[in-house]
Image 1 (cartoon, rainbow, N blue to C red):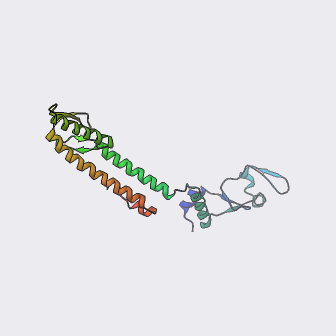
Image 2 (tube, rainbow, N blue to C red):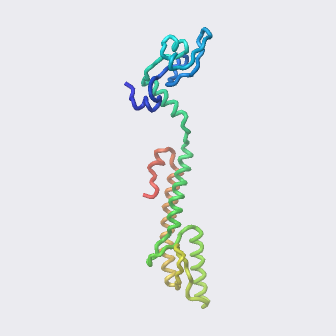
Image 3 (spheres, rainbow, N blue to C red):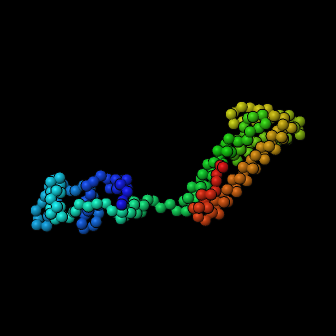
Length: 203
């Protein structure tokens, strides 16, 4: 027996009428119909109560069958947009980029508790500052350099402190880059949806 919830979901409330010529199920009838003899009938609340007129108008009262439900489901599924594997793969890559961009923006926590962002531009800026400090110390021009953290606070560092900071920062950035590259390779090498699903990002 068909599930009543399915019937209500796909066909609404009774009564149900079947279009004789097509088998289509409807639960509302046209206000005006023309009969084979050329006459017309109006107001279905009246003519639908006459089985003979209903039949001549091309309709019959019916019950919903499981076949009707299956056909309706198939029709609705056929109308859904088709998502290709390439689209799923692209979506997974976007998810990967978004997750690691957030990590790079959050950055590395220094031993003192403040953060340095780790995007490509941030790495370039910090590396440039380190090189500049080393050259300044070597030339006797400066002993410290100012570094701005993710909260826009300024930290004045000497060469020894900056060297230790760069070691920790470099390990953090290298580790994230390796993780990102590994996951991206897995996504690109996946050949079906199941292989994409088991690639965990951020876990």
